[in-house]
Length: 433
Image (cartoon, rainbow, N blue to C red; front, side):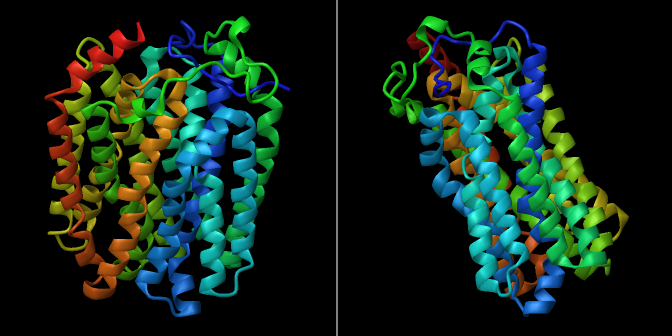
């Protein structure tokens, strides 16, 4: 049995992507889609749960946000455990846990039981993003990092698209319990296939590690790793964590509440609201990939361009959201919401690449866990919960009008990075030489 994948600071991945690299990406990407389908299916059935159990928007927001909250709290310790126990084995276990938890949600008979099930979904998903992207990045050349980070994390958005569309359609015809049941079963099937096709040893070889340095059986044979203080050693990486989390406040709130917004304010049925919300979420996934590709292309010779693009994505999102919710309901409002969704997660690629470039490769799993913690506790968990609380007080449409504020704050934080990024990057490269 292969030991954990431990990447040393000098390993930069293969010189070119291989067929197996893309197999690793495809399977890990597929599980990420399952991850977010299990997370997002709840939001598609908000109107049905609200009516059946007489829930407030604050309670619905808690059911949505508890998953991201558990991810934020547990991603770091579980990522550390995965680095030692083995990333492929850990990813497999995570998929089984969140899938079984989704099946538990299908059997829930009260708000309290559903809350427990959603918390278990969050526990299963806690470290998947950080560990999964560490596996993917180790199998590809360094020059593709922003594109891969954006494309991989876009799997979450595509999972949300499918979770809303499939969940809403199944719920409308067969009831909300069948929506959870179908998605939970799909996750179990993918989780069983993953370790059969992705191997720890092969991924370590793709990372460019010498077999002589590969860890032996057991946990004590792993090579020396960079100290964990390197995760927050520079001003730039700390600001990257903060700016990313702030920008994803809106990226957490909008997917959670768009189906309900369309149901209440546009009068769409549950399945129709889910389908339109899925199209808006698709714009988010496409934007995440496109913005990551633009970041890689424009920053090839100018690393600081990643920061300029992150600033533009943040302020652009704020402008689109502000204009959208100043307008009356109609086609133009939906177009502006789609533009905001295209930009709202555009910072994922640049910030993922900056975190990767500012931290040692041997602790990339922990670095992405730290980024995931910031993204979830500052943005993805807080966004749905606070928006739900505001909706109870002032209505959902009015609550949406506050979403530009964290985006503007994120743009300011990214602007502060420009003073130190190049110097911090140079110091890190000298230290790793």
